[in-house]
Image 1 (cartoon, rainbow, N blue to C red):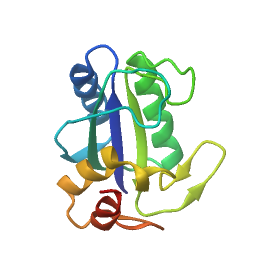
Image 2: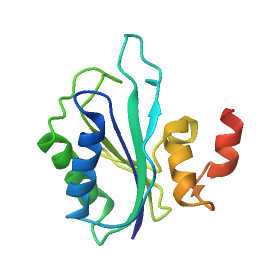
Image 3: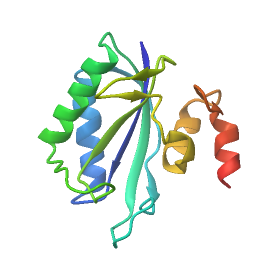
Image 4: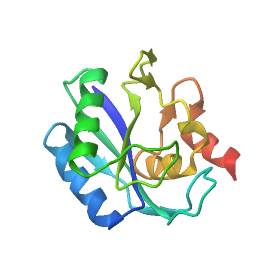
Length: 149
């Protein structure tokens, strides 16, 4: 199955955190493309935070979406992610954005990612590595990105 995964970090050494996360992901999925790293301001937060470093990758996996999500959470935990408040600063954040174009709503997972369409830090790096990217239920990533600007 083809998956689109977004990564972000703004605590510690974000570049090293993203590199470690990509390396760990490579052990459980076959990575086909990785975007550049993009520095972005924190999105919809109330307190002062450092800027984020974000990236998107496209990969192939035999894991189900739920199995993949468990792997992503385990990688986040291994890399020191502490969950506190919504939109808190973090050492690493790894999200499934798209899983083979499927629509999934379960207790642990909603796909496509329900807020990806409004996040330039997801859309821009995704478009960089897939000029024909499409977010199920929302449209062409190129058009979604243009609508934000």
